[in-house]
Length: 288
Image 1 (tube, helix red, strand yellow):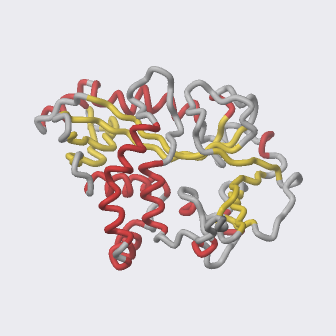
Image 2 (image 1 turned 180 degrees about the horizontal axis):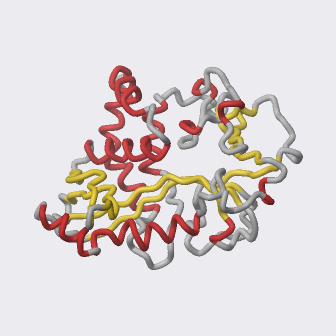
């Protein structure tokens, strides 16, 4: 029997990130809320995009051009740009508007992340996007127990903001008016949230996809350093890492609010991922 393949995936990182953005498990999947697309829907989208991805993989110059055009953005902006690449290269969808602002009485009420034309169903859709990474502090089954490296970033607040403000914008009178000015009326809403949770996962909140991506969590005092652990800059938080992605590991610049994301490499491939937090991280104010 031949030995299992140990070949390293040398696909350009930008392509692997697109595959992750489109095909990875959603982070949030509240039961009965059809505004959050299922894992199966994302799998189907990735399969339909495969010809375009194969063409991009075969064109290193196109990969370099795409990467150089969007790498400097913050992680959320990078995520949005990869979503735009997906939709711009899809036969089924067309981006009608991106970051369309809605003003009311001289102030900005909000902005539509995306207004999308679904050519398969001849419908107009409002999409809201998020790419988030949360660490556990407390009962894993409670949505209030999950925080970003900056503790002011709270999963419960992001979830409520998505529902009560972002996706509701198209139903607000001023949002509805803004769309009507363009001749658009929203037929469907989609809330697309990708990311990863880091903790013990005894049980997850009802709003979270039980099959979401997961990683380990350790305090600095508990963490036992391993030679093949590499610090991840934030632009590497999405798709699985290969050793060649990180030319010069630098833990100092990889820290985010005192927290460090690490990936364990074996045979040039990522085998685990986690966060190391300061020993007093759970005692820090949850408003910081």
